[in-house]
Image (cartoon, rainbow, N blue to C red):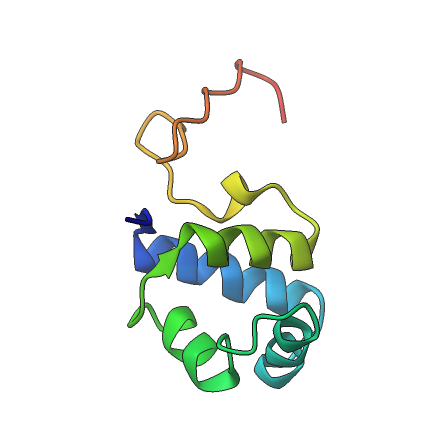
Amino acid sequence: MRERSEPTATAGRIRGLREQRGWSIDHLAAECARVGAAALDASLLTRIEAGQQTVGTDEIRLLAELFDVPATELLPTTDNGVAAAGRRPRPPGSS
């Protein structure tokens, strides 16, 4: 069974990274299709960004690769800054 990420926090991170790059939903869907993930079409990506669809670990990894960021950047964090996947908290003052 694949782990699922909390949809609203992940949705905002995905949307933010897409917008930072100036990509439309259609462009992101085309990038997904280019790397063999045609199931991540514009309709599904729209639902993901709206927080209406959860995202599996495979999709997190793929999107992180397309955005050229660590997968943990797409995951929700706990109150103490630890990613839901178990990332260790950053020392104070680090970025």
